Image (cartoon, rainbow, N blue to C red; front, side, top):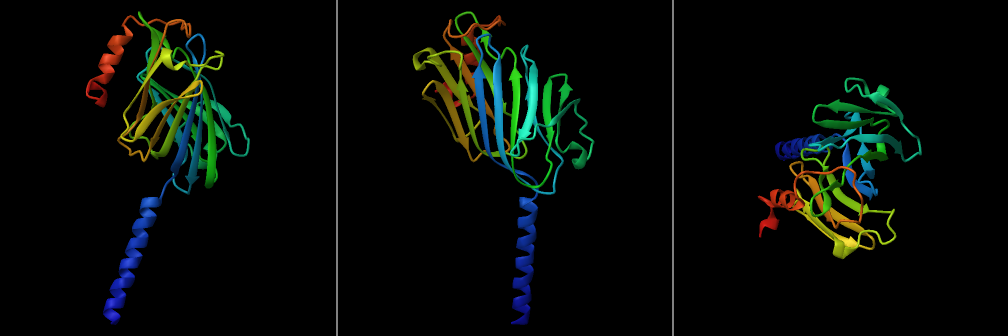
Length: 248
């Protein structure tokens, strides 16, 4: 009996250790992304991240790449206390967690950006990230639109649920359903729908090999984007459909 009891005790200790190892590090429960399309094609984006933070890690960051003339402006971060983080501009990834607390900044790469901020204190945290993507909506020959990765693959931690809400608040009628097309890529459990004057995409139970890409086509005249693309939107859509469920 003693031998059996010791085995059970060892098993419980091992399971507890595995549980601790699996749960170590920050977790991201909900990621809400609000996108407001401006008349010139720019997009004001506000990401709200509800996270559980422990002693692991020093920072959170958003990867933005595969740009087609877009730039990032007006980046800042606040948290659940209302504190607006100090923007140091050029972010130093090698700094300590203590140094990064209450700060944000940008890592500029040849193919894009990393928008970074410090984790700060442990516990249940909410980070609100604001930035503008210039020229998100491009003017194509027959229509306007974009094909944008809002959540990158291999993101750590992976969000348990993502909601993307896209609107054009400058328009009284928003984004009329009969003048807008929208498609969702990169995730296994996602839906896209029209809700009021907005287009809403919802995903859940995401894994690290999944991302969230949203493609949208807008009839000419809804917006007036300042940057043009030499391709037709039909070519963009055809390329996006290759290898996706939309082929069928």
